[in-house]
Length: 65
Image (cartoon, rainbow, N blue to C red):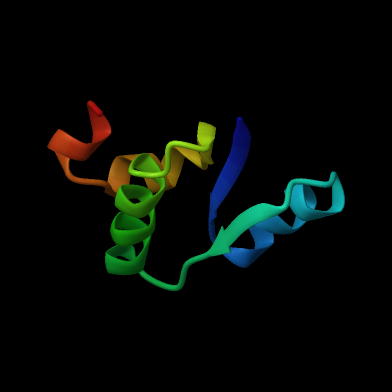
């Protein structure tokens, strides 16, 4: 199982330096939601990391997933 990190570039850069390979820079809230949905559908991902502020930006239904 892999770990994915989704967020603004200043958030994901530290995870890249720590060796996490699946990091996704997002530029806006639409891209954030699309990337989270894509990662939720990836059976190879066991953990998805988001900044708490970004989590609040997701739709309520997606937050509960």
